[in-house]
Length: 304
Image (tube, rainbow, N blue to C red; front, side, top):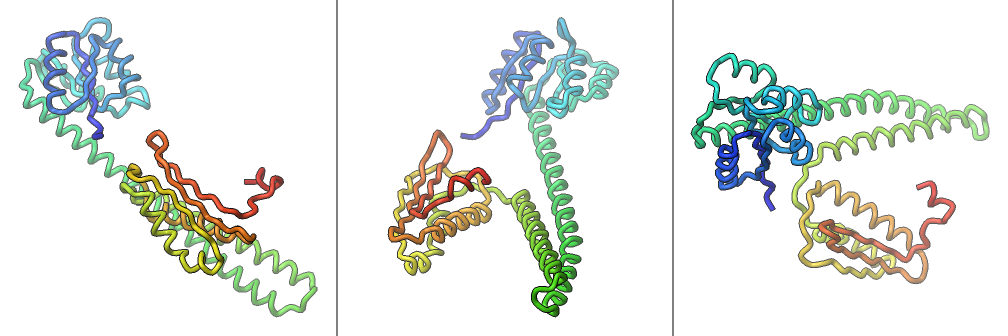
């Protein structure tokens, strides 16, 4: 189902609220209403609107004060706000814009103009969010690449020279043992750098609607020869009509590959069966991969 944009109408005029509710819902928006500023602030924290149509002149709490409080809170600092006012004085509009209003429209307003302003504001907000995401992504990618490069180069040198000296020393000497420790720790650091790069790939993942059954089937096909050579029987029970899930296909397939690989390598006994099932569990896709390997000993499970 398509997520509708949510608009909160805060206005003490019942006629205005009724008009806006009907017209906005007719063009596809979801709406909620509040009759004054105090109720409006309470509604914001339960409704979490994408945009607020905020009247300036209201009892108990003015629209300007409501806006000031919205901008003061981290959770509502960036919510889009269009001020509605019967006043046409420039000073009133300037005050609202100074406090943080995104736009202003004077009553009585033309609904076509208001709807155009709403569309424009949503488009600007989405473009800004996309730009911010791209900037963060670019910064993250640059940072990880730089860190990986700066760490990997000296590690290659340290590991390479340590290996040369290690291989040139006679067996059983103390220095050869020290160099072996250095080489082991270099290998650990190299794995950490590789893991850091993998985390970057996950953070920069391209998410798209994906079929779990298709990914499982294609990944399993890559083990056909290995399964035959090891005498492993595969039983699959993949539920039809599973919902697509938002996922990075490459990263998810890599996870499935490692899980299947571990399951296959774990089976060394006489009975070797790999069972794969998928289910729709309350809107979530559940994957079950079981094997007849001996499993992990109880004393080691606590370390996982």
